[in-house]
Image (cartoon, rainbow, N blue to C red):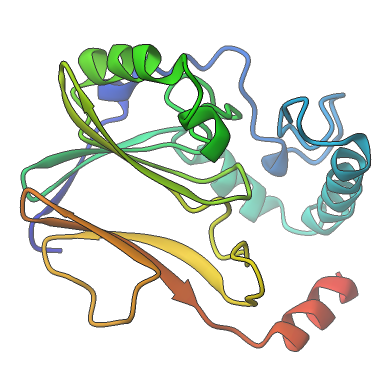
Length: 212
């Protein structure tokens, strides 16, 4: 892909400790952490319990797919990429935890967000943080002492999370703008950071999911 290069996750490892994080989807057995989402207090107990029940069912499906589990387990927890002239950090939760929530829409607007973001930006040299995990999407541009930081959080890759819609959402970061209509776009330093809709047959998907 022109203008894009991937690098070792070691660049992010300095600020992304593996201790205390987990990937329960790659495990066949429950190990006591529920779905592993580490929900904040703003998420009610019924929602967390529903998530745990979904994961329990998916684990039963995974029992028949050991090779898929091995592939999931082998995936890196973080990824560093260079797109055009920007350093991009790809994480699941936030820059310090796989299941972190500090890139959630409300956390990004909290009074203590900027000092922490400055610490992350200064330590990593990352220009763009791309993440998911929080279910609700968020996008922010910060002017920090160490430089500009863009955060794009689509909430959950492929899952509908815009009000009154049924399409999924993915992040696209490229040196050229997408030819497809975007939900949002930030253009900076010759790079286009976009959220794109992913259209699919919702009834067919629901039927397949229930049949799992």
